[in-house]
Image (cartoon, rainbow, N blue to C red; front, side, top):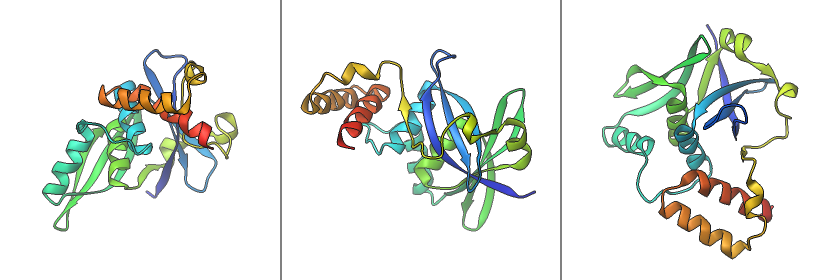
Length: 191
């Protein structure tokens, strides 16, 4: 069975499920999208790495990466291999000294690790055909990674210096969800 490569193209707050986020993966070279509902902590872990933020203390996924690197374990790929009753199943394909091992993982954790290890994410046709949607039904081709929330305007009245101060405070307090929103506002102004 051939694997299909996926790219992360979006991460946004779910308007329908409180505290949940929608992670959108896109078929490489194709028009299908795979939306996955994930929790706030996992969304935060993915967003921090995508935004290249540096937390004051390592998060769980950073700890896993450090541990793996210390013992020369490489994460080669993440594979979303099954979908049952709306729940995606994923595995980490790891390699140490030429020996490969598959490790079962929650899909959100697997993707948080994939962005840290800069490894590819794959799925199979059966998953895309059952849960995938065409891009014009969800996102335009030009959409970029976006962490959105309905109250993004709270920062619109702040100066850039105030935003940068708020960003540092949020990082120091390990409120990475807030920090990502502030970073988005700063990036929007710099664009």
